[in-house]
Structures are given as C-alpha cells and as structure tokens.
Amino acid sequence: IRGKKIHRKFDQDKISLYLSAARSELFNAILAKRIALGIWNQPLDGDVMNLAGSNSIFVAQHIDETMLSRLQSGDIHLTAPMWGAGELKSSGKVNALELSVITDNPIYQQLSQGLIEFGLKQQRRSLRMLPRNLQWVW
Image (tube, rainbow, N blue to C red; front, side, top):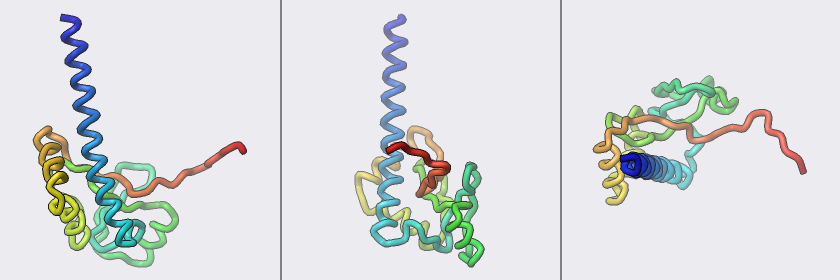
C-alpha cells in the first residue's frame, strides 16, 4: 500500500508539473507575440494591470498619463493570462490578441482545453518583474 501511495504522489507531482508547463507555454506565447509586435511594455485599452507587490488586478479601460506614469514607475504591470476555465479579463484588442495566440495554433488549442478539463481557473501574471535592492559581487 505504501508503494501505491508513493506512486500516486509521484503521478500527481508529474501531472502538476505538466499543467504548470502547459500554462507557462501559453503565457510565454502571448508574451512573445506582444514582444514581436513591440507592445510588451506598452499599455493598450483593455489591458489587465497588476498592482505591484500584490495579486490585485484591474482592467485599464482607457490609458492616460497617470496610467503611463504608474507603469513607468513600476507601481503597476501589464499582465497575460495563466490559462484555465473562465473568461479572459482583458477586453478589446488585448483580448483579441490573447485569444488569437491560442486559436491560431492547434497545439495551443489542445493545451488550453486540457487545462480547462483539469479544472484550472483563469489567472493573470505580470509580464515583467522589476528587481528591487539588487546586490551582486564581482
């Protein structure tokens, strides 16, 4: 019985790793598309923002000078989806871009469907990470 428990745990760990890898692949594909378009760090109407240092997100319906300043200062960050069940939080052109990355690639369609079938929920992750108090030794 103990061997079976270990085996099941090992299988669960592998499944968890595969699901995480699939989510990361889709996230990275969306980020790569934004990089290719030159908009990985440019906010667009409909982008979902992450408040730095938190899991708090909000949709930017309209980009203004305050929003640009907050993005430049590192107070907020653009996000992309960590795929799962539920609607994308993004809207407009951003939503269309995120969906197109998935729907234009049959493998990504399968990965996204598999993540939904495994019960993962839509989440968002920041497109960048700004190091704070970086220290190094030469």
